[in-house]
Length: 92
Image (cartoon, rainbow, N blue to C red; front, side):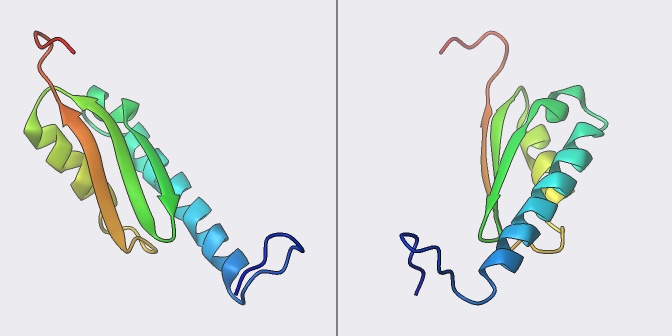
């Protein structure tokens, strides 16, 4: 069991954190070089192998495209695709 008060962490904890950082860096790189400009603005976080995507795109296929770009990364157990689909004409 982890005890954050005295700094003790379970075996493998640092490796998992490093893997998350590597996954996040690669996801950001892939999205940052995507062929659709809107995908380059997608934000992502990774914790425990769960990659979370956030942002707004105009079309549903771009939401799917973002998922496809990152879903097969080594170290990703699951993708939480929290991208909103909203046309430019829609108001908040």
